[in-house]
Amino acid sequence: MSLEPESPSPLNTFIIRFWREVGAERACWRGRVQHVQSGEQAAFLDEDSLLAFLRRWVRMPEEIEGAKE
Image 1 (cartoon, helix red, strand yellow):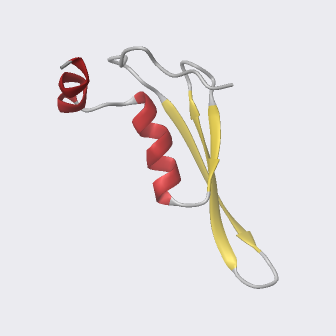
Image 2 (cartoon, rainbow, N blue to C red):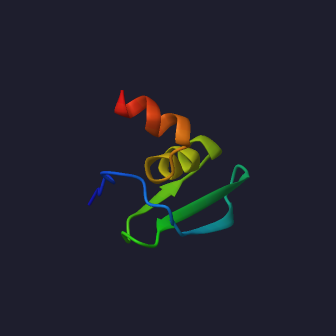
């Protein structure tokens, strides 16, 4: 379930978990992030995926002003 916030909340809490998986070829880091207020979760394999999830909930003031125009 995807809950897109209508307007950014002044308070957002996230739980981020990391673990290392060792496979036959190589070890890699994996993770899961959860937005506490909505309960929405996502798995990620890299920094870009984690940041994309966080950006959906946390916007910088200049991004908010740009969206209003």
